[in-house]
Image (cartoon, rainbow, N blue to C red):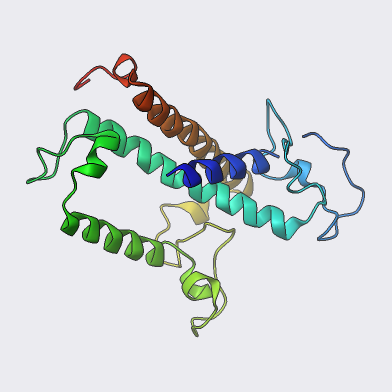
Length: 206
């Protein structure tokens, strides 16, 4: 759990995009990343650890995807924490507490079901045209994905293709910011639970 939190924080810090001097060259190793998605007010291009100081666009895209994925997981984590804290349970799990206490009270079979579910979600939520985990071992052809994290796979659209380029960038920025907020949110909830005062933030069965 601690490693997940640390990885989320590092990825988020790297992809916020420190306002360094814009580079005149746009090669893969000297790209101007200050104009990339996520480099926005109030911090602008924020890279305090210097993870993309060399302007490596491929590395930046990889870290941006890591941030996006951590953000999506964190959004699910916040929702799950709030729902279970409010007392909502699946049938048969009424006696399972919420938060960290649940870890010590889950039966082994439930752990097995969760691991199987995580595995299926990880396998399904990726670019299927690139093969499992980017190995490119299938014959589906060229991927229709517009960016790393675009997992529509030619199936789900929700009107995305009808949006203009500016609208698409706005939607992607919204998701990125929601994910950043969720990473801070789930971290805050976990810290306050360990401090023993999460009930001051979330009254019982709010």
